[in-house]
Length: 303
Image 1: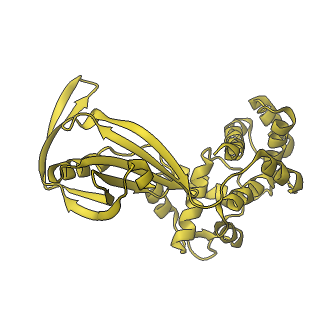
Image 2: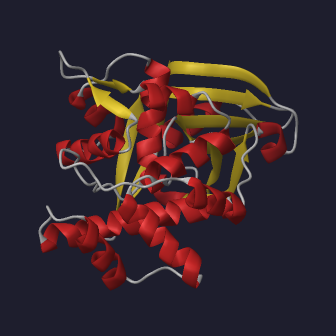
């Protein structure tokens, strides 16, 4: 993948924690329209992977989950360190691995001494294994899955980013031991409320369960079975898990029948006809989750 991105063969040569040495830089403060001078002397930085080619050296900051942002320092400090050591072009790259998709964000610092000069140059996505899903695959799942009304003991989900549910599924599978709410909160930089939302979503879908004795969460047999599948079958099984709940299947049915997403009022009507235990305010918030999860299903056909 990196050979494709850098357009030359690369070898894995560096990783781990190291000292930055000494360097100076500026951070632009947009509030005061001034630059703040910073001196770094033997600070600690970490390179998740350094890949070297004939003319380029890529430094990788990697996360095994979807992310919305990251701290520039994670790329800037290793970048400055290796600019001092090499005459080759140093290429800072942020890598996000989520749901079997490897997404590489290639950045460039346009001013060596300006922390804020980072800009994205390109983005590249790769998948290992069969991934292609057609709308006909979604229709087949829709036509064959049996849906049911939610059990009263299940918390209707409020977790708009379904990819985060998958990330947590991946993490529990890789770790293969119970994770507490506190560990999940730290791992994903959630607040406690977000942790509850995403754990409850996994429980709602039958993917996670809480240990009877203890505070940790593990995968259910269903969750483990899904994780052993290739990317295409894994995603289709997750679609089945969502559509087995009547609200979600009915909303997707509206889309498939009319070739357009139902509006919020239609979603709320479907929810009110199938769920009686939510207040109107809560139902309005949960409707956004319904829309976002249906969006995730439909976007599978364009990945």
